[in-house]
Length: 141
Image 1 (cartoon, rainbow, N blue to C red):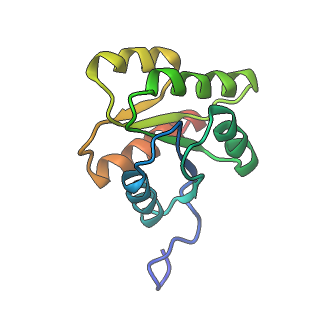
Image 2 (cartoon, helix red, strand yellow; image 1 turned 120 degrees about the vertical axis):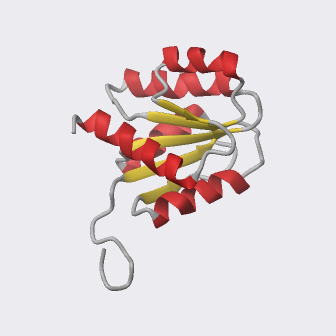
């Protein structure tokens, strides 16, 4: 960190996105700021993204992780296609999902290849630690 409290080298590049028709973006913007303040470079794609657009942006931006904010209940329909599209392209970018995810759906998302799930009320420290962990695990560190 330099004299101005900024990081010289980002901890990693993280794309955060809102899939589907969910228009509630306050939480994802808070998460983006938490990650930015922790030293990550954050790319926010905005609302109403499709799985294909998220994967295309992740490739274009050469990200180390993808964070998806889901509050609409469409997580089982929208998140697995993101992981599948990544796999089809031979990419191992970890996907983290945050939001309203019923406990019964957690194993389904994990089986689909989601690296981590953050429940409502996750602390800033938990968000940062989770992203650091999935990036480290993916890079073999």
